[in-house]
Amino acid sequence: MRFSGSQGAEKQIEEILKRSGFEPDGEVIRKLAEYLKILTKWNRTHNLTSISSEREIITRHFLDSLSLVRCFEDIGVDWHGKRVADVGTGAGFPGCPLKIYLRDIKLFLIESSHKRCSFLEYLKTAIGEDWKVICKRAEEVREGFDIVVSRALGEFEEVYRLLEGLSEKYVFVMKGKELDRKWLDSHGYRAYRVRIIGLPEYYILYKELSPPSH
Image (spheres, rainbow, N blue to C red):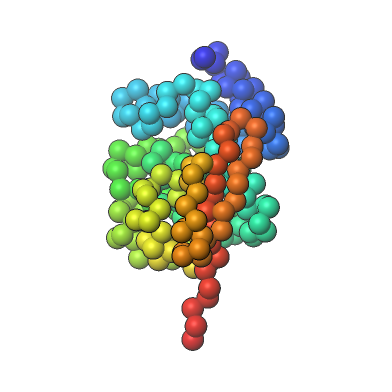
């Protein structure tokens, strides 16, 4: 399915998000529609995401990213004004939809691919958003962040220590339908089950880190 211009895209985005319980205003819808347009165009030559259907991008990228909003709300995370790092963001997921929807976060996008970093810098200017692109491997980043999120960085056992090393408060790892009890019992994570219309059920693993002792 393809949309007939930006108005068709905006209508589709609004319908999908509202059906799933979100309340996007006109600015959020407009920015996501422009994001969709730019991503679709760049994807033809730069292969930023394997998903090419516009409807699938809305559902599997935009809506999926916003599942973190529901998670934040349900477990009581205060995101206002916080420094949020998206590690291994790729074409901006979940970080960019989070920033567009929540507005009041300071977003940092960590990505090692130069072509994806170029896309994220262009996207920021094109849609009038404000985030910082850190074009490095996560292992090379020395900054600390209040909230660290990751969707597709790698296997949990291989990345959770890296994510915790970048975070000063919370870590969120978007996982699939399978849940290994070891992640909870041995590593201190909790599991949030995502139940959103339009998405399959899956888990977000999260952990509130203890403040350093003095």
